[in-house]
Image 1 (cartoon, rainbow, N blue to C red):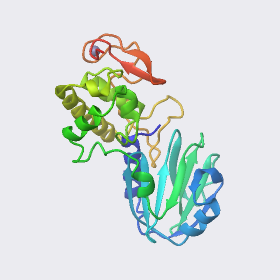
Image 2 (image 1 turned 90 degrees about the horizontal axis):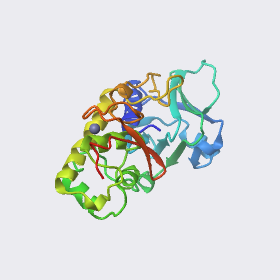
Image 3 (image 1 turned 45 degrees about the horizontal axis):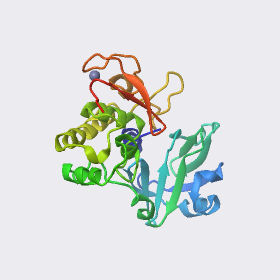
Image 4 (image 1 turned 180 degrees about the horizontal axis):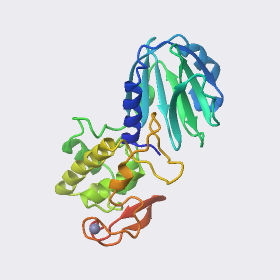
Length: 276
Ligand SMILES: [Zn+2]
């Protein structure tokens, strides 16, 4: 699933593609359930003849501001991708929503697993205010993290995956951040000492920024799970320290990386560097 660095890479590609201000001449929806709200029919009516005024990110949502003051929110979920192509490019299977622009290009939402969702709403905060702090923003301080951790008796990994606790993290970057901070994923959140909280607070932006610099993490050898809008694979897989590196040596101590299950999620740790 695309996480913060992958979604930001998509946002950066969209911003580089000169879509801001370009009139949207029409929309077509081939899989109505992709449009979470309003109905597919209303979606097509309401987006026609508008244009994007800004494209950004909140958590794992791509946020498109529209010229009529409403907002298109896109969540890619498991397998969603955006294709920016010329209108005469034949539509391929799994391209469920197509926006046409005045200059002859189309932005197509491609989603093999069909879990991705689009919301066209007047008030985006109704959906976005459920999200926790942005880990790369200045207001994500040690104090904020410490106060949040103190309130929870939950295990560290499921808590960090919870989008209402902190926005944008998923399985890859949580495993990487916990290894970086030397913390076991089954530690109780409220039990962390101040030095441990500081280590986690340093580790989260460090692994996210590394992912951003490498334009995201594409897994899989054939059809990867993440492509940028420009159909690039991210390079971050080569710099992962533990995620999907079972039995390979820990880059810090050379013990073999282990795969365990935490909160039903596959989790990768170095048992020596991350003591419970
Ligand atoms: Zn180690």
